[in-house]
Image (tube, rainbow, N blue to C red; front, side, top):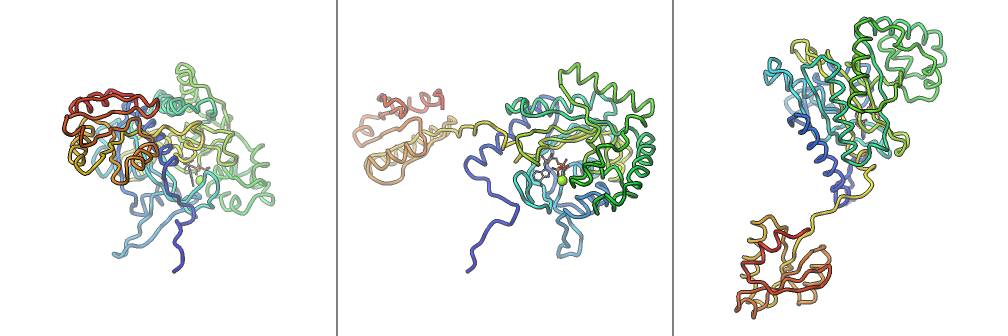
Length: 415
Ligand code: ATP
Ligand code: MG
């Protein structure tokens, strides 16, 4: 039999990896809650059109990264490559477009057929936030500040820089787009094949190219700044001053365009130098056109997604696993009492495990191996007297407690 392996680009989360992952999710969820965001969970797969319509068929994601398949009923389904389109679909299909704003947090797996490398996988996970139904730059500033607060709560804000750009409104973008087409058309011999294909249909995407030969050309490409309409400029000024008020530092970077096609005005990325080429840990922008693509009314929105694996890699220390207490029955006559004691501990929220087998020494070894804070020893003599020996494993001190005093005592411990 050939040996079974996880699929290329996927990984199991066990031990430290799971602790780090869960810490990122729980921290993001907690901070999002402080900003008034509610969690939504949408399906892992969607009608393929949810993504093909919204992401634009020139995006890398749609043109080469999607896991699309026909199900047994002949419908084209796609494992979600990102969360925003699905949240907008859910807003529309749940009839929530008249109950705005909606502030949505989500966490879960995403799927993209990419070349696996450090920080880039085929199944990866994101936390994300969408603020749907607010057109003001203040909404962008708060949503970005929330991302920053999550990085700070994870202890990694100092490892990241917020890079900020504006893509202007539709009118600004149309003028900029024309200038980009003219600029890159002159240089078409030097463009990568991918970028050549983007030239007519979506030249903004060339700015996001990772091909080294494109990077050099992009550096001197026309910038949006010269093409901003008055109102787009006012939005951009409003955003930057709100970020100043919130104390969120940023660096303006005209090269930030976002990988997906539905963005306008705000585009941003929190980047780090600690992860090599996969340096973007949390990124997003304003997408005022997407809800309409899903069949709803035109609705302003701003959001971001953070890569959980990349965030988890930046954590300095692995969050501590909760330490249990171990119940160690000594002799057959003690097992029933031990079982009842375990249940009374769990009822008070104490993580409690029993060492099922072996002599006293083996059972104590097991208690140490699972990192127990205390071992509770119950022999037949203890059962007869209604007591237990509670031994603190870190310092070896031991106390005899009445059986019904053990759970209240341990429920108050640090562990
Ligand atoms: P990149 O430029 O790295 O391909 P992207 O622009 O495609 O990123 P988004 O669609 O904005 O990424 O997703 C938001 C975040 O999700 C990224 O900043 C990154 O942290 C994470 N992410 C995206 N793709 C992957 C992947 N294949 N594996 C792991 N994390 C990813
Ligand atoms: Mg990508």
